Figure (tube, rainbow, N blue to C red):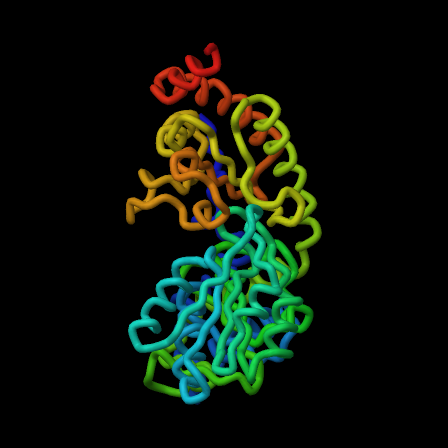
Length: 395
């Protein structure tokens, strides 16, 4: 049975070019990049090259790229690092209600330390209204963090306009965007976005796990979360994970060179699935904006059934997807993103999150659409909610 991965937000398969570039640094060139003797030469040169590759993707200076262990660490460095470095200027922070948990939980930690957190709402498509950010700004606002694009519903925010507001009306407030889901699939030019900080996760765009990227604009202050040596310009101590960093660099180079090709390929598959599902199954709804969304994201809610059941049946057909239902969540709560855009709690239980990758094909999309329709019908036939709804319709 063929396996179709429609859960690329969990992880992507490393590209062969990435793996090949990493391999020498596990055994042959195993030295410490901070060593000044010969064993440190190749690792140090590799780090410099990777930093240049990441800087090229972000359109920034090489000394504005910080390597971390993950996108979550990058988000924590941005949120906690900036807050702790600037707490003498104020303790007010603004974010959106649909941020990733690595942002929201970092904010909760800061709240316990006395920081004031203001979560601005989103509309039914998941958009943050820049005017809401403007209204929320205060004299002691030190940081605004708005995701570049939602990891659940794919909505791409107007980061440039929000950044302009933060820098015009804020009293020196920093602007951060979480690009962990979007980087590698839409443009992440930090000068165009106007941000002071940006987070990215290479394992989402065919790089290795255990690597993270953090753009820190020159002059932007953050307090290190890991104290120790002088690595990463003194912003993150610890011996560098050279293989992972090398892989991240190659993934960045591939992303820059292939961005338009990737978008075109993914958009064709995305369109086929959205059109196919909405036309073949009744009472299925697309979450997020249809047009201004990530090319590799699709999020449906299917009425009367649970996401977990659909996942299991699809898995039996060799199709791997994700869901925001409480049953599939280890915290046993429905998706906070779907709640924020006004999806009813019962309806949110029937969510399907499909994240596409370069290995997916139109044939995969066709098979998925063909399989989903009978699965939904089988599950609805077993659902008391569906039976009740049919009775009400007859009345």
